[in-house]
Image (cartoon, rainbow, N blue to C red):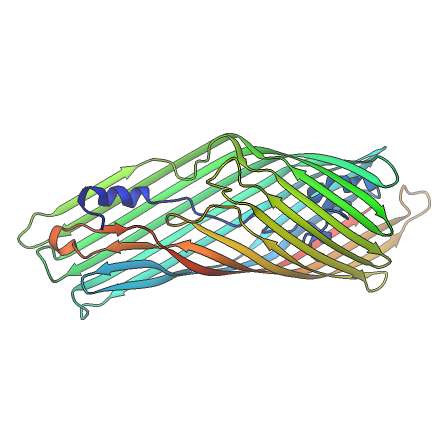
Length: 450
């Protein structure tokens, strides 16, 4: 058990950085949403700007695409997360966050300039809004502890990629491309815990615990992406993509962190202990903060059908607070044309995390496994022969994505077994519990080819 001088110190120190979504929470563009993101080998147009810039080397048509998740529903429940130990028993309660919000996932423009095709885009690669609430209550008829405890963990995690890519056709079968992205990340987190206890087996009769944490961190980084597409013949296409480490060159982090305990009794001096620190939470430092990433895909395009498989790997190097194990993921997608105007697609994917095992509240590590299904409708408008293009192509895509998250989360455990004797509350080392998270999103995108 944690006692006296170490009690408040560990309440402050055992405060990890909350984990948000994984790297592939969102899919960008119509093509990717129809095929679960398995388009490294066949990406072209706006999708190539993000997934494989080599696809821009096809140099087809200029295109403008706006896409977003019309809604994202996240249901995250952590069983037995909030725990209290006292003389004679334990209390365990779950906390849960159920949030629905809109995500404007990307805006991309592609233009052909001579032998090069270039694309510029803004991608919302993470937008996570969460609020976990939990309570522990023990009534006055349940001696030796009457307790009313309430806790909340809320925050926002954002990440934006802004940049451009280019693609060039080296020959009839080979295309190369590259891109540069500036990355802006911002995390806000607020935690509060209030516990009001009355005990009946010692000199201290009441104990009030308050815990407040307000943390914020921001950083600006840089990523480089290189891509290859190689037509192997007989409808087969190979795609390869390498993303550089995410190199952070500016970071700011600040935290207001306070804990207070007030205990009273009839014949004993009042215990009043407070501690305030400003040690930043969520500081990762400059330099490489995420490891490189490599994708290899193989696709078959035949007639009205496209089928694609790919493997994605990220090694556990550079920053062990963010990537402490290999993260290997797979994706498979298929799309076929029902007729000239309608396409259907579906896919399966994994989005496993490379984060280290959770150690202290509120850390968690979750691997996602999911499915996508969608429909694309396009309309062709003929133009006059004097126009630069003979037709305009308008397209609308609607798709659903479901992901099941399987992993571990931390728990917090407060020890009131000695509160009546010395007026202090201890904290037992954080434990782990298994969790199941759910993500459901509806994608709606529109594009114009001209």
